[in-house]
Image (cartoon, rainbow, N blue to C red):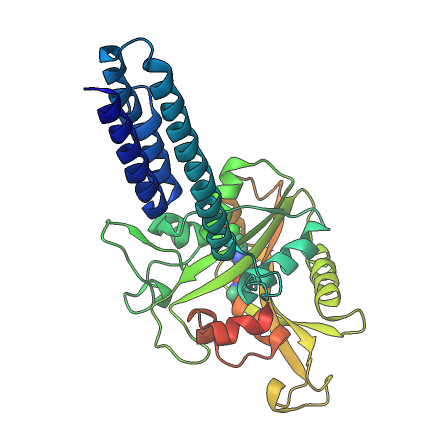
Length: 346
Ligand code: 2NL
C-alpha cells in the first residue's frame, strides 16, 4: 500500500459515496449512509488505516486528500438531506392538511321518549304536593299483586288468560303498580305520599288500545283524617296543572276491589271543550284516571290500623295520558322504537 494506492482508494470512495448519496431515496437512508461512510467505524476510517504504512513525509498529503474527500461527501450529504427533508415535509403537510372549509359532522341530538317524558311531567306536578317517587319490582308475588289488594281468589284478573305468570310458583309479572304501594306501606310510616310509576304486564289481545306491557302511575296518600275531599281537591289541581286552569273536571262513581268508594275522574274533552265530538264519543268528557278511598282491608294488609289511618289512591295509564298530550292514536307505537315516530318528540 503506497501513496498512489491510498489516493486512488480515497477517490474511489468519494465517487462511490457521492453516487450513493445522490441515489438515497429518503432521509433515513441518508442517515444510514452517513454512518456507513463517515462514522467512527465507517469506510473512510477504514481506508485511512493504510496511512500507517506510509513514510512520515507522505502522510500530510494523504491527510489533505482525506479532508477534501470528507468535505465533498459532507457537502453532498447536507445538500441531499435538505432536498429530501424538504420534500418529505411537503408531502406530510399535504397529507395532514386540515380543510377548515369542510362542513362539520352533525352530532345527533337525543330527546325524551314520550312515555318517560309524560311520567316526568306527572311526577313534577304531584311533587309540588309532596309526593315522593318510589319504585318496586316488576316480578311480584300473588300475595302483594292480588290478595293484599282485596282481589278475591276467583277474580277474573287472576285468570291465566289475563295475567302473565312466571316459572316460579306464586310469582307473576305485576298487573299494576299497586303491589309496590303495599311495599311502601310496609317500609315507611304515615304520613305517606307516594308516587309509583312503572311498567306493568297483562295477557292481552293486542290492538291499538291494548298492549301486553304498559305504564302506570299510581299514587297513595295515607294519614290520620285523610278524606275524599283531599282526593278530589288534589286530582282537580292535577288536571288543571296538566291540561290548563280553565278545564272543567268531574267525578263519577266507579268500582275497584281495593278502594271504597271508588271513582272515575274526567276532564272536559281536550278536543271539543265539552260540546261533544268523536274523540270523546260525543260525551264532552274524557276519563283520565281511576281513584278511591283505600279499602280498610288493604290498609290492614299494609300493616296500618284503619281506625286510625285513612288513605286514598289513584292510578292512571301513562299511554292514555300521552295519547291525549300528543294526539297519538295507537299505543303500540310507544314500544316499537321506530325513530320516525320517536323523533317527532325530540
Ligand atoms: C286505573 C285505576 C287505581 C288504585 C289504582 C290502589 C292502591 C292501593 C290501595 C288502593 Cl295500595 N288502591 N290503587 C286505586 C284506584 C284506582 O287505578 O285505572 N289505573 C290505570
